[in-house]
Image (cartoon, rainbow, N blue to C red):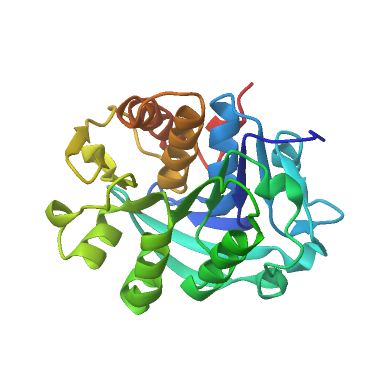
Length: 278
């Protein structure tokens, strides 16, 4: 285990059942925390995950545990979240069932120093925006000295059901990630997406690429042509690679450009397989 990490993701992993467009079903590791952390690792950052860690480790999660510094709390394998997702092509998907497992026991108490001492902390989407906000406020309270860059992700249901809490997260974060659907729900349309001075907003657009949004301008990043097999985790992959680029000193546009490449590679495989190469 590393003594320190460059980027620490706060989030969860899951065991997913995917119904793909070719009428096959796959059982894979997943979760916003997993995809984001793996992608940042694949982009050559030292990465930690603060989230429920099952013991004994389920086989699908073992390759992830070998690559990322994973900090407890310890849970039983039965406490791992389980999601069932149907894909319909063109990036369209539906969450059929969700069991969040031990996430309700994952609280912002005794956050390890490895988290607060990292250069970038990313708060991946959790089951509710309130839970994300609890963690973000705890991080701000626990930071005695210089506060690391705080990054936040969300997903569509949170934006549509609790926009007020998502707005609080948006105002507190230095970096925010949304997809097209989330940005439309939050701003009214993607064209109206903006952010405050010195903050960054990234909006993924699927086959249309991504947007890098600052207070002064919006830059479009074209997508990379690929054959979509499984779009699960594409946005989180984009997030992880972008954060790694920013940590490594790249500007936001260059970071996003390398992120769309790896996101395209991810959707051309099943689950996180492309992020486990090497």
